[in-house]
Image (tube, rainbow, N blue to C red; front, top):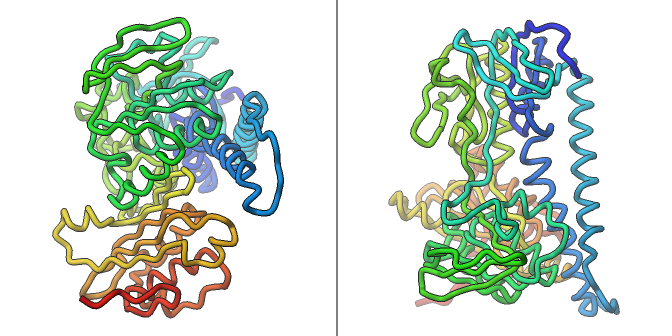
Length: 470
């Protein structure tokens, strides 16, 4: 799609999960919009993150279920992953979604421009592409450039044995052995995928537990799950140096003095913000040492008419947060007056079992000195979970002890990424655990685990033994 006119009410830089919704919302509000993207529409989420990893995880989950089919009364022999077919399915899903986004942009009259954008000192947008340079006169600018996988100076990323998460999603063959540096969301999801494919995995974590930002109970149970999958987990451990880059592998020395060899090594230590090269300093936009763009609750930068959203603002680095911020920025860039509220943001980890969380966990509540009541219910006591063969995990509610108001929740178990939203809405409405307990839930359903956890807060859970009196 080419630009017919260089005058735009709003120019959005970056077509990821923050940028393209911002462009659509601005167009819905009557603005003439240009959307500039240097790589692929959909950004990291659709092309190298959320969606492709979920496609691989779906295949991994099906492989595990097929291997366990006899427990369901089925005999399936010779279950083997077909990696090329798995990758082809992943690619088709991604292409379908990115194609759909392009159609939405076209239907909303948005001009999509392929190229690398920068902001000029007079607050317009310059786009460099193969065809040369193009200047877009912008009434308002929304920066949505996202982030890339962070790298470590210890490793030479030009070596084929060293991978980022992006590289891991483009592998032509399954590695026989894999070292994963970092045990956060990305590391645990990749461990889930490749363990199902038969890869021997060693996971290294600098902190004293995996998933260090999650609730300690969740972290402990996920460690048990991964170990049962045969994954070697080493906490308080990192790579001291690389001893050898081979044609088909890598050999490293650990901080413990041990050595490890593997076909591939995956770095999964977080993200780096894409704020450099945009001309922000020249335009007067405030940045910190990390490259974070400072914004207020309206997603406005310190420069009038320039907004920033998503990862590049250094807040909650999640696709759905970027989308919410994009909608707020777009409305404010087109005459609105809306603020973002990020106190209640669900977060999900798509391991097996899944993890969903929102608000405070037990550790954060303790750090803040909040007196809380913790109420739990195990999926092992739930009929629907047992029928599904997915009885691992629990629902945990973090409640204000005095008011019974829900301050947070953690769910580890089947469809946790879906179930967590019941609690998020309850928190948004200021509900108490009693409100949930008094709401009729369908039977049999997984949501009953939330009901039971709420009832347990009052000593009234039907399908859990009462606590022993001291």
